[in-house]
Length: 617
Image (tube, rainbow, N blue to C red; front, side, top):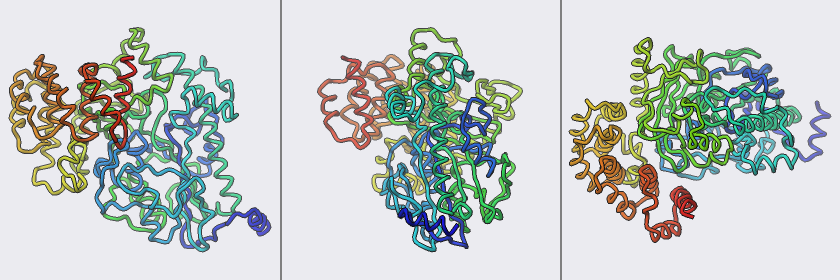
């Protein structure tokens, strides 16, 4: 060992001294790969020897979940140990303010003497300097720079498995570089297409390519593990591997199905630190864990107590808490890039309940970025040409099912919605109420339209503003459930709430009328009144409903709103609506030119406008 350490020193590599009282922690994350792509999770077509070996050296979580099916939202949950919807970070790349009390696990570990490095991804989805959280953040950041005598926490983020890895240009580049074989290892024609997907050549091809991509990822993980061994620090270092959410096939990333939120998670603990975990090498752990649990778990492994603001459960370490018998994982999906939609869900590892709060919108697409993937484009094209079996069309049409109930043990691909089955009525009611209570307990800021964040609370985080309101938050959650139910018998109540002084209540009442569509024709006069509401989201909802009811004032109001909206979020919501009602072609060219020349932080409005320009050409 001494010779090895001297040899490493001659190479110019600084090896941190062992910190005997606390373990080092090495996190390895990958992007967009659901649990089912790895051999150790039962995929017989996979070639993932290093991750498979890691699962036998350590232990594997059968039911680990990303609370959100997209990266930045998931990372905001991980870094602070607080649900994104509590922070107001549920919209993809939104960068809204969050309350000061939400301190990251990185800051707390550093306070506890850990040297923390990140190679090299942050993207935490809230306002601030992400890099400043770390001792080191860059492609060169490494635990080998750790000062002598300090323990380290290091995270390496591997992008090899990102959904863009199957975009044709990227495939060609990787083949040219020799990273993946020029001809897929697996014959696409012999692969088994999951039953939730149409059997199209492009989907088969993407599957075969992605298997090669996962093998590339596996090799990259192996390289990091070998590097740890070469430093002589493996016996002092806990290794945690997980992916940031599911994917990459259609109906994976951005969806609350297991294909979008269930992730691989493997932990290897050296003998020296076995007392910190209740699991044995090779064990397949059945208890449910999710990303909101990671921050308190990392602190627990370092011997630290969980701060009051963290909402998860430490599932490893000296402060481990046993799971509750009725424990569920909270799942959420809101705006992805430029497209709005709101869904919430819970799962206990077997039963999954998903509620759609925007059932008047189709289930696809939730981003135009995904159409860089041949499989997604082929599915959309086959739907438009009428060549699909009926069961593959529902994703593209509205209205959606408001409620979905799946038994993931007997229906692992979630193709059979049991919500309307009388045999499961009691379970449905229990899970519906559990979701409602979870949204109340977490103070789900998703009840507030994103465009209202700055309108209602220009100088403070929306979560702080919500906490200061005297209105009954539970009643707002109830209203959102009522509004999304799409039952005509609720119309009278919704019409009453349209006159509420609370803008969030007015919004959900208007949404409820919009979801009812022509069944809410009696709301016409009140929709006209809401065209003068102070809040853009309410005006746009009212105009949308008027347009559906055949009132010309609806379209006129939507086009007039182009000059009334004052933020990128309000414009984004407006253009989403203009697309839904098919009047994008009536946007004045002069307005388009002004918008394209304006400064917008995220550029999603410009992206939608450029797509419109392409269609016009």
